[in-house]
Image 1 (tube, rainbow, N blue to C red):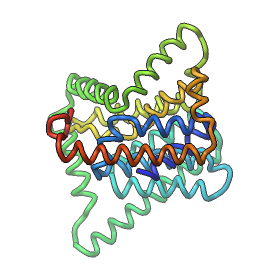
Image 2: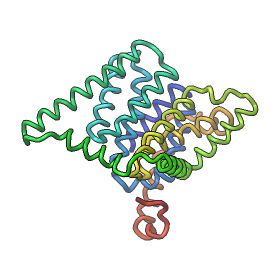
Image 3: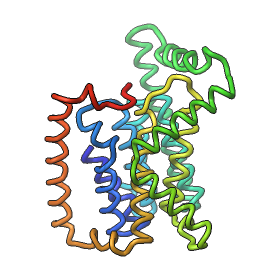
Image 4: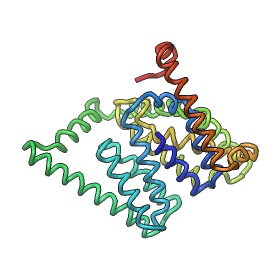
Length: 289
């Protein structure tokens, strides 16, 4: 979780500056999904880390080779932990390229990263066949594909899945996603140009692609779209940073003071989470899966 906060800070800082970066970190910490996952260890945490860290590395890949390596490492992480769900990083990196980084270098890094990840998967498949005499990929893809199509393709069910995930996003990324929606609608009326902001467009595009991707599958869980919660919360805070000087001023303090405040907040939230999980969790959980 701490690595995810670090990657989120780095990504937002590139496109929004220091105050927006710190604000986004605090905003994500103060979401229902963050507090809930303080006591959970699902694979969606590494998925979110891989997506955010991968976007951060890709955003800086023209500076030095190490940032390209970070993107490739993020691809490897998500492929070997989440399998088919790694397409979320593929979609998000493509969105970042289309929105902000249309250069040959960035496109080559995306392409090379996917070629290397595919080679690693094929290498694992060869080792698995050598050790067991069976194919891992045929079993895994058959299982995942079977789950996806066993009920047939029913458009009304996919629309239901979409609405289901959108409702989850409204809750688990609250209140920041609501703030984001408010300022997005206001920007359409006052023509402030807020939604031309690079990070806001990236966050919305990546989140939308993530939700649409998982809406294709009838097996649902709140945690599947975890990367969308992170980016939507960060985008809501980034919108506040653009429109509310009083909010921005809160995070213009020295990094040491902000880090100490964040550490204290994490300790308090963890203690409260342990207490409520131990004594009251079965009475307050919402949409638990």
